[in-house]
Image 1 (cartoon, rainbow, N blue to C red):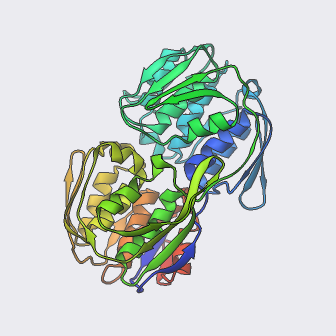
Image 2: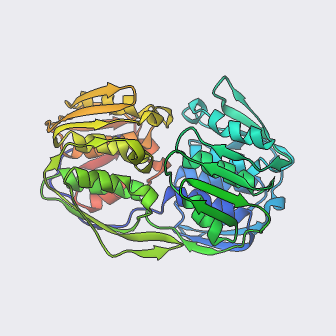
Image 3: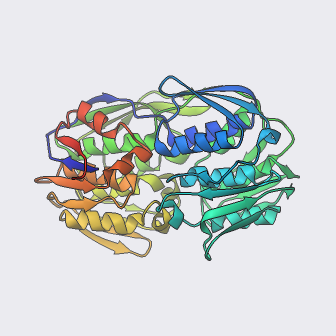
Length: 437
């Protein structure tokens, strides 16, 4: 599918982005091994999360859709997981694969995980290392253990593991394996990563202690089923807010946005850039802080973004590069080499997309350097099968002169199936999906 974008003036109005992707994955996973019936409202009905739900069914969990965005999960505890009849197909879901590898590592059977072409290029060695230290056997392809990858589980022992990078996926996989381990499991990170797993485990009765960058899980307490509402995904809302910041005359209010401090790095970066961002009164949903975020068009200033901020805006860096093309001065994004092993090499991908559209952008080993403001022009660009690259290119197209064509745009359904509809609802009526001819 191709996405055609033409500038159409300001985007204005209020919108609620779909449910948070990270929380949707974790809610389904933990509900499947809790005791009792959990109801998950606002579950993100995107391809990645649906692959996780299907994998849980294959492992013996009862995961039933109710309506358009609600799941009812009947959990039977960790011991209820059974060996699937075949490989678990995870599509493009790196989060689903990595977290499930941790979950099944303590069960006495083999599970093989497969994925699409993009996921099959993503390394699983960073998950395999701690799981092997705990007693599981993990095999994959090549030195980096790309999928297909097989986890042979069994008796695990708790470990203290210092992650080489701040990664919520690594941390979560180790903690989920720790649920089945003998003794305490501790994860120590070099910087803060998103903490949804810790919050949800605590809410469901696990004995978990957080001390700065150190998280310790003591197994034994069974997880208890719960009902929860999934907040709107800040990583999805970011694209709509970003469009408002650079399209003249725009004013967008995003509702019920997840404002977990481990996920609000983009808002802090935008504050550094002088963006007109306003956060409304916050409240809690399912133990997570939630509030409205308003973005208005205005002048942006260049900034240097790096260090501990990067793990808290890792998914928003592609969008940030687009905003930087319209900021005054030289924006430097550093310490972001993790983006090279996402659905695509996002540093290279965004450099290619924005160069084709006329931006002054230079790729560095660990980031990007963008000089602005630079007028953009329409071009035909390739999403490389990466949903965040595709949506970032669409935002750029809203302020580019002429027509922007994004190929491979079907990947947007990976995380934000209603992206085009929501943009159109805010006034960007010249954004159109077209089947490849």
